[in-house]
Length: 87
Image (cartoon, rainbow, N blue to C red; front, side, top):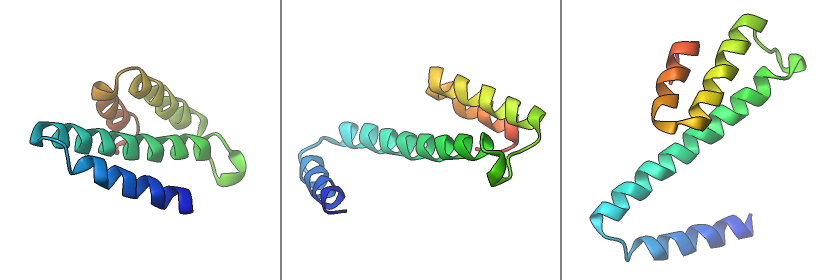
């Protein structure tokens, strides 16, 4: 936990020196990383029958959409929404 706190402090110091355009890009990238982390956690749950995984057809659709999201982050969110009705 101490390392995470040090990283946050370092990040905040670095952010202070960024231009508005770079801040916008950083905010977009941070949102992408958060969403990707959430979807990766979802994929882990879908792949584990002991955690109440979904029906095979739905699971396959969502996992396919996750692969598309990894390949093309801009269009991946749309693919995920179509696959599971979320995003």
